[in-house]
Image 1 (spheres, helix red, strand yellow):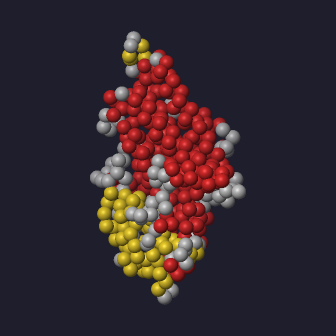
Image 2 (cartoon, rainbow, N blue to C red; image 1 turned 60 degrees about the horizontal axis):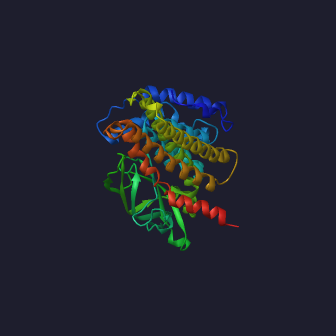
Image 3 (cartoon, rainbow, N blue to C red; image 1 turned 30 degrees about the horizontal axis):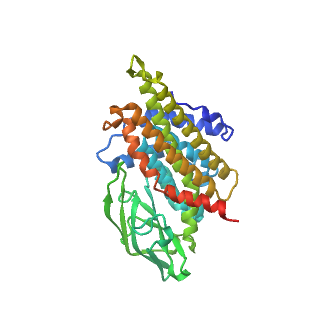
Length: 384
């Protein structure tokens, strides 16, 4: 059985414990097999299942169809950790629904929330967060996609790449430079996939199969009601959203690490070597101790960040950066050690730890690479 003793920590209340228990039982029952003809079909099926079961309701407040009265970061983190431990692709689907809904939930108007969020929560509308460009990854301010005023609306031109859900998304949040507002001015827009000015120009292959691709916006016209937040303050929308959801990336890494430790424990207890169980060897015990310590340290940082935000902190930039940095780097170590302990079984195609080994690598890059998190943390230390 997985170790769930961390749920007794004082950062959680009974509602969080019930949520974790119920989702764990549901995931064990529902995510073992997801019949599909393609990766895209699998993602849509998972979105439907998560929506039908009410789990996507965690991404928005109750007054717009969500599950809780307000956005609760501990619940989101627990959901991602649990899903990641059971089925990484289910975590991916949940995460992108949350991230795609995030700008609307946090910065959108009530009209936008009423129009956009119910479909995402139901799992019938697939969401995407279109920020990255070929020359604007970690340096998001270098984006070149532009939005220009055109009568009462806007015209968007540019290209976005490495966009999760490109090709299957029904709704994109697109971030643009807004030249009319000055050199450092940006804007965020809600753009429907059916907009004739939006085209998916290619799909991208990655270590762990996920639907990623490139979109091109050419004379893409949107109404004034597509603007999320204020024109000129689009980076506030982007970074404010990432400030919240970055913690959940650490939670997903934590889920991967916990599953890797579970797989390693099962293997070393049952594997016979040198006249006894592999678990009897002191070097193996030392490796397990390091893995468990890394996991607990990650959990403490992840749920500290979530608790801090849930208790009223306007920004959790430092806490979220520490949580993502440590949890993703530690999970890479834990999973690598699990592969080592399983030996040949650990590198066999289709094994659990082989899949985790491919899944974890991207988490150290997306939503702010580890080195960017180090710069963010150092910046908070050096700023008077």
